[in-house]
Length: 214
Length: 245
Image (tube, rainbow over all chains, first blue to last red; front, side, top):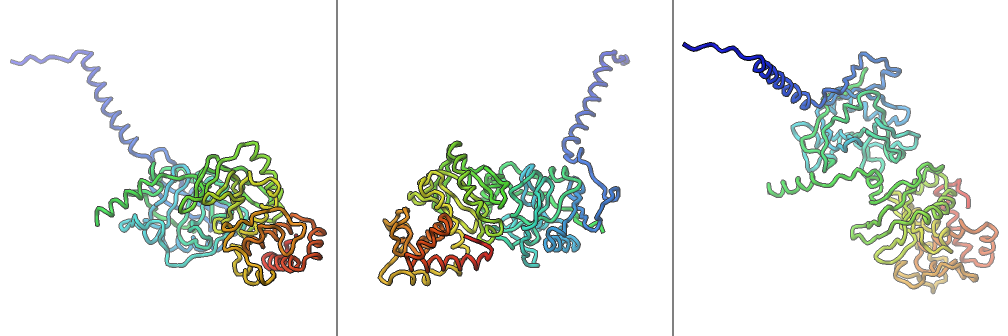
Protein backbone atom coordinates (compact mmCIF):
# COMPACT_ATOMS: atom_id res chain seq x y z
CA UNK A 1 0.00 0.00 0.00
CA UNK A 2 1.34 3.36 -1.02
CA UNK A 3 1.33 5.90 1.67
CA UNK A 4 0.16 9.34 0.59
CA UNK A 5 2.67 11.99 1.51
CA UNK A 6 1.44 15.57 1.77
CA UNK A 7 3.64 18.30 0.34
CA UNK A 8 5.35 20.43 2.89
CA UNK A 9 4.68 24.16 3.07
CA UNK A 10 8.04 25.05 1.47
CA UNK A 11 7.42 22.60 -1.38
CA UNK A 12 4.06 24.26 -2.05
CA UNK A 13 5.71 27.68 -2.13
CA UNK A 14 8.35 26.47 -4.61
CA UNK A 15 5.62 24.95 -6.77
CA UNK A 16 3.58 28.17 -6.85
CA UNK A 17 6.77 30.15 -7.54
CA UNK A 18 7.64 27.93 -10.50
CA UNK A 19 4.15 28.33 -11.97
CA UNK A 20 4.31 32.11 -11.56
CA UNK A 21 7.78 32.18 -13.11
CA UNK A 22 6.50 30.23 -16.10
CA UNK A 23 3.55 32.57 -16.60
CA UNK A 24 5.78 35.66 -16.26
CA UNK A 25 8.34 34.29 -18.73
CA UNK A 26 5.59 33.48 -21.17
CA UNK A 27 4.06 36.97 -20.83
CA UNK A 28 7.41 38.75 -21.16
CA UNK A 29 8.23 36.71 -24.25
CA UNK A 30 5.05 37.90 -25.97
CA UNK A 31 5.47 41.47 -24.75
CA UNK A 32 8.98 41.65 -26.15
CA UNK A 33 7.97 40.03 -29.37
CA UNK A 34 5.14 42.49 -29.90
CA UNK A 35 7.05 45.64 -30.78
CA UNK A 36 3.80 47.54 -31.24
CA UNK A 37 2.64 46.92 -27.67
CA UNK A 38 3.30 50.43 -26.35
CA UNK A 39 2.54 52.28 -29.56
CA UNK A 40 -0.66 54.27 -29.46
CA UNK A 41 -2.94 53.62 -32.38
CA UNK A 42 -4.87 56.77 -33.26
CA UNK A 43 -8.40 56.41 -34.55
CA UNK A 44 -9.16 59.30 -36.94
CA UNK A 45 -12.86 59.01 -36.08
CA UNK A 46 -12.08 60.28 -32.59
CA UNK A 47 -10.23 63.36 -33.79
CA UNK A 48 -11.64 66.68 -35.02
CA UNK A 49 -9.68 67.99 -37.95
CA UNK A 50 -9.68 71.60 -39.14
CA UNK A 51 -9.31 70.53 -42.75
CA UNK A 52 -10.66 66.97 -42.99
CA UNK A 53 -10.38 66.98 -46.78
CA UNK A 54 -6.62 67.22 -46.48
CA UNK A 55 -6.22 64.35 -44.05
CA UNK A 56 -4.70 61.06 -45.15
CA UNK A 57 -4.39 57.94 -43.02
CA UNK A 58 -1.52 55.58 -43.59
CA UNK A 59 -1.87 52.25 -41.84
CA UNK A 60 1.45 50.59 -41.03
CA UNK A 61 2.16 47.40 -39.03
CA UNK A 62 1.95 49.24 -35.67
CA UNK A 63 -1.07 51.40 -36.44
CA UNK A 64 -2.26 54.58 -38.06
CA UNK A 65 -0.19 57.54 -39.15
CA UNK A 66 -2.39 60.59 -39.65
CA UNK A 67 -1.03 63.07 -42.14
CA UNK A 68 -2.24 66.55 -43.06
CA UNK A 69 -1.53 67.43 -46.68
CA UNK A 70 -0.61 70.96 -47.77
CA UNK A 71 -2.04 71.69 -51.21
CA UNK A 72 -1.34 75.40 -50.70
CA UNK A 73 2.39 74.78 -50.45
CA UNK A 74 2.82 72.16 -53.18
CA UNK A 75 -0.35 71.97 -55.31
CA UNK A 76 1.01 69.61 -57.96
CA UNK A 77 2.85 67.40 -55.52
CA UNK A 78 -0.19 67.05 -53.28
CA UNK A 79 -2.45 66.44 -56.26
CA UNK A 80 -0.22 63.55 -57.40
CA UNK A 81 0.00 62.18 -53.87
CA UNK A 82 -3.78 62.35 -53.39
CA UNK A 83 -4.43 60.71 -56.76
CA UNK A 84 -2.21 57.77 -55.82
CA UNK A 85 -3.75 57.52 -52.35
CA UNK A 86 -7.30 57.56 -53.73
CA UNK A 87 -6.46 54.85 -56.25
CA UNK A 88 -5.10 52.64 -53.41
CA UNK A 89 -1.79 52.51 -55.27
CA UNK A 90 0.21 52.54 -52.04
CA UNK A 91 -1.42 49.46 -50.55
CA UNK A 92 1.06 46.64 -49.93
CA UNK A 93 3.97 48.82 -50.97
CA UNK A 94 7.22 48.41 -49.04
CA UNK A 95 8.97 50.86 -46.75
CA UNK A 96 12.06 50.07 -48.76
CA UNK A 97 14.43 52.68 -47.36
CA UNK A 98 14.56 53.18 -43.62
CA UNK A 99 17.19 54.96 -41.56
CA UNK A 100 16.54 54.47 -37.88
CA UNK A 101 15.15 57.57 -36.16
CA UNK A 102 15.86 59.59 -39.28
CA UNK A 103 13.68 58.72 -42.24
CA UNK A 104 11.31 56.18 -43.75
CA UNK A 105 10.74 56.02 -47.49
CA UNK A 106 8.12 54.14 -49.48
CA UNK A 107 6.13 54.41 -52.68
CA UNK A 108 8.03 52.40 -55.28
CA UNK A 109 4.94 51.12 -57.07
CA UNK A 110 6.92 49.21 -59.67
CA UNK A 111 9.49 47.27 -57.64
CA UNK A 112 8.21 47.59 -54.07
CA UNK A 113 4.96 45.66 -54.24
CA UNK A 114 4.36 42.85 -51.75
CA UNK A 115 4.78 39.51 -53.44
CA UNK A 116 6.84 40.89 -56.30
CA UNK A 117 9.63 42.81 -54.58
CA UNK A 118 12.66 43.39 -56.74
CA UNK A 119 15.59 43.99 -54.40
CA UNK A 120 17.94 44.88 -57.21
CA UNK A 121 15.76 47.66 -58.55
CA UNK A 122 13.78 48.79 -55.53
CA UNK A 123 13.83 52.56 -55.19
CA UNK A 124 14.05 53.14 -58.92
CA UNK A 125 10.49 52.23 -59.87
CA UNK A 126 7.96 54.48 -61.53
CA UNK A 127 4.23 54.98 -61.20
CA UNK A 128 3.56 55.16 -64.92
CA UNK A 129 2.09 58.63 -64.47
CA UNK A 130 5.28 60.45 -65.36
CA UNK A 131 7.33 62.81 -63.28
CA UNK A 132 6.19 66.16 -61.90
CA UNK A 133 7.91 69.47 -61.28
CA UNK A 134 9.67 70.09 -58.00
CA UNK A 135 7.88 72.63 -55.83
CA UNK A 136 10.64 73.93 -53.62
CA UNK A 137 10.22 77.69 -53.66
CA UNK A 138 7.71 78.09 -50.86
CA UNK A 139 8.96 78.33 -47.31
CA UNK A 140 8.59 75.07 -45.47
CA UNK A 141 10.29 73.92 -42.29
CA UNK A 142 11.30 70.32 -42.58
CA UNK A 143 10.64 69.47 -38.96
CA UNK A 144 10.10 66.00 -37.53
CA UNK A 145 7.14 64.33 -39.23
CA UNK A 146 7.36 66.27 -42.48
CA UNK A 147 6.35 64.35 -45.59
CA UNK A 148 8.14 65.04 -48.86
CA UNK A 149 8.32 63.62 -52.34
CA UNK A 150 11.49 61.73 -53.16
CA UNK A 151 13.35 62.40 -56.40
CA UNK A 152 16.53 61.48 -58.24
CA UNK A 153 19.58 63.78 -58.09
CA UNK A 154 17.82 66.07 -60.51
CA UNK A 155 14.88 68.33 -59.79
CA UNK A 156 11.54 67.77 -61.53
CA UNK A 157 11.81 63.99 -61.20
CA UNK A 158 9.24 63.48 -58.43
CA UNK A 159 6.83 60.62 -59.06
CA UNK A 160 5.25 58.33 -56.44
CA UNK A 161 7.95 57.80 -53.84
CA UNK A 162 7.69 59.74 -50.63
CA UNK A 163 9.56 59.97 -47.36
CA UNK A 164 8.68 60.96 -43.83
CA UNK A 165 11.41 62.36 -41.62
CA UNK A 166 11.72 61.30 -38.00
CA UNK A 167 14.00 64.17 -37.00
CA UNK A 168 14.33 67.81 -38.05
CA UNK A 169 16.12 68.20 -41.38
CA UNK A 170 16.60 71.92 -42.14
CA UNK A 171 18.72 71.13 -45.21
CA UNK A 172 15.74 69.51 -46.92
CA UNK A 173 14.08 72.91 -47.33
CA UNK A 174 14.39 73.98 -50.92
CA UNK A 175 15.58 70.50 -51.92
CA UNK A 176 12.50 68.33 -51.72
CA UNK A 177 8.85 69.00 -52.50
CA UNK A 178 6.93 69.02 -49.21
CA UNK A 179 3.46 67.49 -49.27
CA UNK A 180 2.41 67.37 -45.65
CA UNK A 181 3.13 66.67 -42.03
CA UNK A 182 2.33 63.84 -39.63
CA UNK A 183 -0.21 65.00 -37.04
CA UNK A 184 -0.45 61.75 -35.09
CA UNK A 185 1.35 58.43 -35.15
CA UNK A 186 5.01 59.28 -35.54
CA UNK A 187 5.78 56.48 -33.07
CA UNK A 188 4.23 54.04 -35.53
CA UNK A 189 6.84 55.04 -38.09
CA UNK A 190 9.68 54.59 -35.61
CA UNK A 191 8.70 50.93 -35.41
CA UNK A 192 9.05 50.33 -39.15
CA UNK A 193 11.63 47.63 -39.76
CA UNK A 194 15.16 48.97 -40.22
CA UNK A 195 18.60 47.47 -40.58
CA UNK A 196 21.80 48.52 -38.86
CA UNK A 197 24.12 48.27 -41.80
CA UNK A 198 21.91 49.21 -44.68
CA UNK A 199 19.24 51.77 -45.40
CA UNK A 200 17.67 49.34 -47.86
CA UNK A 201 15.66 46.70 -46.10
CA UNK A 202 15.62 42.95 -46.55
CA UNK A 203 12.07 41.63 -46.00
CA UNK A 204 10.69 45.12 -45.33
CA UNK A 205 7.48 46.24 -43.66
CA UNK A 206 4.60 47.24 -45.92
CA UNK A 207 1.92 49.89 -46.02
CA UNK A 208 -1.30 48.06 -45.12
CA UNK A 209 -3.51 50.83 -46.44
CA UNK A 210 -3.32 54.49 -47.30
CA UNK A 211 -6.58 56.39 -47.63
CA UNK A 212 -7.96 59.91 -47.57
CA UNK A 213 -10.24 60.63 -44.62
CA UNK A 214 -12.97 61.94 -46.92
CA UNK B 1 24.01 33.03 -62.21
CA UNK B 2 22.32 32.44 -58.85
CA UNK B 3 25.61 32.85 -57.02
CA UNK B 4 26.14 36.15 -58.82
CA UNK B 5 22.69 37.28 -57.72
CA UNK B 6 23.38 36.34 -54.11
CA UNK B 7 26.68 38.25 -54.21
CA UNK B 8 24.96 41.30 -55.70
CA UNK B 9 22.27 41.19 -53.03
CA UNK B 10 24.87 40.78 -50.30
CA UNK B 11 26.76 43.84 -51.55
CA UNK B 12 23.46 45.70 -51.70
CA UNK B 13 22.52 44.89 -48.12
CA UNK B 14 25.88 45.36 -46.46
CA UNK B 15 26.45 48.76 -47.99
CA UNK B 16 27.34 50.91 -44.99
CA UNK B 17 24.56 53.23 -43.94
CA UNK B 18 25.31 56.85 -44.77
CA UNK B 19 22.75 58.73 -42.76
CA UNK B 20 24.59 61.99 -43.19
CA UNK B 21 22.15 64.46 -44.73
CA UNK B 22 24.85 66.70 -46.21
CA UNK B 23 26.48 63.72 -47.87
CA UNK B 24 23.14 62.57 -49.21
CA UNK B 25 22.47 65.96 -50.75
CA UNK B 26 25.83 67.02 -52.21
CA UNK B 27 27.85 63.79 -52.08
CA UNK B 28 30.81 65.26 -50.28
CA UNK B 29 31.91 63.45 -47.12
CA UNK B 30 33.25 64.85 -43.85
CA UNK B 31 31.27 68.08 -43.86
CA UNK B 32 29.40 69.89 -41.16
CA UNK B 33 27.10 72.86 -41.21
CA UNK B 34 28.80 76.21 -40.64
CA UNK B 35 25.81 78.46 -41.33
CA UNK B 36 22.51 77.75 -43.03
CA UNK B 37 20.32 80.63 -41.97
CA UNK B 38 21.40 83.23 -44.47
CA UNK B 39 19.36 85.88 -46.24
CA UNK B 40 19.96 84.52 -49.72
CA UNK B 41 19.56 80.94 -48.45
CA UNK B 42 23.12 79.91 -49.24
CA UNK B 43 24.16 77.05 -47.00
CA UNK B 44 27.73 77.05 -45.78
CA UNK B 45 29.52 73.84 -44.85
CA UNK B 46 33.08 73.19 -43.75
CA UNK B 47 35.31 70.17 -43.87
CA UNK B 48 35.84 68.43 -40.55
CA UNK B 49 38.35 66.02 -42.06
CA UNK B 50 40.13 65.77 -45.43
CA UNK B 51 37.99 64.50 -48.28
CA UNK B 52 38.51 63.07 -51.74
CA UNK B 53 36.03 63.36 -54.59
CA UNK B 54 35.50 62.43 -58.18
CA UNK B 55 35.44 59.11 -59.96
CA UNK B 56 39.23 59.00 -59.77
CA UNK B 57 39.28 60.59 -56.32
CA UNK B 58 41.48 63.30 -57.80
CA UNK B 59 39.83 66.21 -56.02
CA UNK B 60 41.31 66.60 -52.58
CA UNK B 61 40.74 69.14 -49.82
CA UNK B 62 41.63 69.35 -46.13
CA UNK B 63 39.85 70.59 -43.07
CA UNK B 64 40.65 74.19 -42.12
CA UNK B 65 41.48 75.34 -38.62
CA UNK B 66 38.76 77.10 -36.70
CA UNK B 67 40.36 80.54 -36.66
CA UNK B 68 41.04 80.64 -40.41
CA UNK B 69 37.55 79.42 -41.03
CA UNK B 70 36.01 82.16 -38.91
CA UNK B 71 37.96 84.89 -40.69
CA UNK B 72 37.47 83.58 -44.21
CA UNK B 73 33.82 82.76 -43.69
CA UNK B 74 33.18 86.44 -43.02
CA UNK B 75 34.90 87.36 -46.30
CA UNK B 76 33.07 84.72 -48.30
CA UNK B 77 29.75 85.59 -46.71
CA UNK B 78 30.21 89.32 -47.37
CA UNK B 79 30.99 88.70 -51.03
CA UNK B 80 28.28 86.15 -51.69
CA UNK B 81 25.69 88.28 -49.92
CA UNK B 82 25.83 90.47 -53.00
CA UNK B 83 23.76 87.84 -54.77
CA UNK B 84 20.04 87.56 -54.17
CA UNK B 85 18.24 84.28 -53.59
CA UNK B 86 16.58 84.59 -57.01
CA UNK B 87 19.90 85.14 -58.76
CA UNK B 88 21.50 82.20 -56.99
CA UNK B 89 18.54 80.03 -57.82
CA UNK B 90 18.82 80.94 -61.49
CA UNK B 91 22.50 80.12 -61.63
CA UNK B 92 21.97 76.99 -59.51
CA UNK B 93 24.18 77.77 -56.57
CA UNK B 94 23.07 76.78 -53.10
CA UNK B 95 25.90 75.15 -51.16
CA UNK B 96 29.31 76.55 -50.29
CA UNK B 97 31.95 74.17 -48.99
CA UNK B 98 34.88 75.75 -47.17
CA UNK B 99 38.08 73.77 -46.93
CA UNK B 100 41.79 74.32 -47.42
CA UNK B 101 44.50 73.23 -49.86
CA UNK B 102 42.02 72.30 -52.54
CA UNK B 103 43.58 70.50 -55.47
CA UNK B 104 42.46 68.69 -58.57
CA UNK B 105 44.86 66.11 -59.96
CA UNK B 106 47.50 67.56 -57.63
CA UNK B 107 47.12 71.07 -59.08
CA UNK B 108 46.07 73.61 -56.49
CA UNK B 109 42.95 75.54 -57.34
CA UNK B 110 40.89 78.30 -55.73
CA UNK B 111 37.54 76.68 -56.23
CA UNK B 112 35.62 73.89 -57.86
CA UNK B 113 32.15 74.73 -59.16
CA UNK B 114 29.52 72.05 -59.62
CA UNK B 115 26.26 73.42 -60.97
CA UNK B 116 24.60 69.98 -60.98
CA UNK B 117 25.09 69.56 -57.24
CA UNK B 118 24.56 73.33 -56.77
CA UNK B 119 27.86 73.43 -54.93
CA UNK B 120 30.94 75.60 -54.90
CA UNK B 121 34.00 74.30 -53.06
CA UNK B 122 36.31 77.12 -51.98
CA UNK B 123 39.87 76.94 -50.75
CA UNK B 124 40.00 79.40 -47.88
CA UNK B 125 43.82 79.36 -47.96
CA UNK B 126 43.96 80.58 -51.53
CA UNK B 127 46.14 83.61 -52.28
CA UNK B 128 44.97 86.32 -49.89
CA UNK B 129 45.48 89.13 -52.44
CA UNK B 130 42.92 87.76 -54.87
CA UNK B 131 40.70 85.71 -52.61
CA UNK B 132 37.62 87.94 -52.82
CA UNK B 133 37.82 88.27 -56.59
CA UNK B 134 38.29 84.56 -56.96
CA UNK B 135 35.00 83.92 -55.16
CA UNK B 136 33.15 85.77 -57.95
CA UNK B 137 35.32 84.16 -60.58
CA UNK B 138 34.08 80.77 -59.37
CA UNK B 139 30.50 82.01 -59.18
CA UNK B 140 30.81 82.86 -62.85
CA UNK B 141 31.96 79.32 -63.62
CA UNK B 142 28.81 77.96 -62.00
CA UNK B 143 26.80 80.30 -64.20
CA UNK B 144 28.81 79.41 -67.30
CA UNK B 145 28.17 75.70 -66.70
CA UNK B 146 24.51 76.31 -66.06
CA UNK B 147 24.00 78.48 -69.15
CA UNK B 148 26.26 76.94 -71.77
CA UNK B 149 23.86 78.06 -74.49
CA UNK B 150 24.18 81.70 -73.42
CA UNK B 151 27.94 82.00 -73.08
CA UNK B 152 29.45 81.33 -76.46
CA UNK B 153 33.22 80.82 -76.64
CA UNK B 154 33.32 81.42 -80.41
CA UNK B 155 31.65 84.81 -80.09
CA UNK B 156 34.02 85.70 -77.27
CA UNK B 157 37.16 84.74 -79.13
CA UNK B 158 36.24 87.23 -81.86
CA UNK B 159 36.74 90.10 -79.42
CA UNK B 160 40.48 89.36 -79.27
CA UNK B 161 43.12 90.25 -81.83
CA UNK B 162 42.99 87.71 -84.66
CA UNK B 163 46.49 86.42 -83.94
CA UNK B 164 45.75 85.67 -80.28
CA UNK B 165 45.13 82.07 -79.21
CA UNK B 166 43.95 80.73 -75.88
CA UNK B 167 45.52 77.59 -74.42
CA UNK B 168 43.74 74.28 -74.86
CA UNK B 169 42.76 74.19 -71.20
CA UNK B 170 43.18 76.30 -68.09
CA UNK B 171 45.66 73.86 -66.55
CA UNK B 172 47.79 73.31 -69.66
CA UNK B 173 49.36 76.76 -69.63
CA UNK B 174 51.75 78.81 -67.56
CA UNK B 175 49.51 81.87 -67.84
CA UNK B 176 48.39 81.76 -64.23
CA UNK B 177 49.02 85.25 -62.89
CA UNK B 178 46.06 86.91 -61.21
CA UNK B 179 47.46 90.40 -60.79
CA UNK B 180 45.40 92.97 -62.67
CA UNK B 181 47.39 94.47 -65.55
CA UNK B 182 48.02 98.19 -65.61
CA UNK B 183 47.99 98.04 -69.39
CA UNK B 184 45.27 95.59 -70.08
CA UNK B 185 45.43 95.09 -73.87
CA UNK B 186 42.23 93.06 -73.95
CA UNK B 187 42.85 91.03 -70.80
CA UNK B 188 42.49 91.89 -67.14
CA UNK B 189 45.08 89.36 -65.98
CA UNK B 190 47.56 86.85 -67.30
CA UNK B 191 45.16 84.08 -66.30
CA UNK B 192 42.55 85.65 -68.61
CA UNK B 193 44.70 84.44 -71.48
CA UNK B 194 44.33 80.76 -70.53
CA UNK B 195 40.87 79.95 -71.97
CA UNK B 196 37.77 81.81 -73.12
CA UNK B 197 35.75 80.76 -70.08
CA UNK B 198 38.52 81.80 -67.68
CA UNK B 199 38.73 85.11 -69.50
CA UNK B 200 34.98 85.60 -69.10
CA UNK B 201 35.25 84.69 -65.40
CA UNK B 202 38.05 87.20 -64.95
CA UNK B 203 36.03 89.95 -66.64
CA UNK B 204 32.99 89.12 -64.52
CA UNK B 205 34.93 89.02 -61.25
CA UNK B 206 36.60 92.37 -62.02
CA UNK B 207 33.20 93.87 -62.82
CA UNK B 208 31.96 92.72 -59.43
CA UNK B 209 34.99 93.74 -57.38
CA UNK B 210 35.92 97.05 -59.01
CA UNK B 211 33.84 100.18 -58.67
CA UNK B 212 31.94 101.42 -61.69
CA UNK B 213 34.25 104.38 -62.38
CA UNK B 214 37.27 102.09 -62.37
CA UNK B 215 35.58 99.73 -64.83
CA UNK B 216 34.60 102.73 -66.97
CA UNK B 217 38.25 103.75 -67.06
CA UNK B 218 39.23 100.33 -68.38
CA UNK B 219 36.48 100.55 -70.95
CA UNK B 220 37.69 103.92 -72.21
CA UNK B 221 41.30 102.77 -72.50
CA UNK B 222 40.72 99.31 -73.95
CA UNK B 223 38.18 98.70 -76.71
CA UNK B 224 38.56 94.90 -76.50
CA UNK B 225 37.81 94.94 -72.79
CA UNK B 226 34.97 97.35 -73.47
CA UNK B 227 33.36 94.77 -75.79
CA UNK B 228 33.99 91.96 -73.34
CA UNK B 229 32.44 93.90 -70.46
CA UNK B 230 29.37 94.72 -72.58
CA UNK B 231 29.07 91.06 -73.54
CA UNK B 232 29.12 89.85 -69.94
CA UNK B 233 26.68 92.58 -68.91
CA UNK B 234 24.21 91.61 -71.62
CA UNK B 235 24.44 87.91 -70.89
CA UNK B 236 23.90 88.44 -67.18
CA UNK B 237 20.85 90.57 -68.02
CA UNK B 238 19.49 87.62 -70.01
CA UNK B 239 19.85 85.41 -66.95
CA UNK B 240 18.58 87.90 -64.39
CA UNK B 241 17.37 91.28 -65.60
CA UNK B 242 17.34 92.67 -62.06
CA UNK B 243 21.01 92.08 -61.41
CA UNK B 244 23.23 95.15 -61.18
CA UNK B 245 27.01 95.26 -61.08
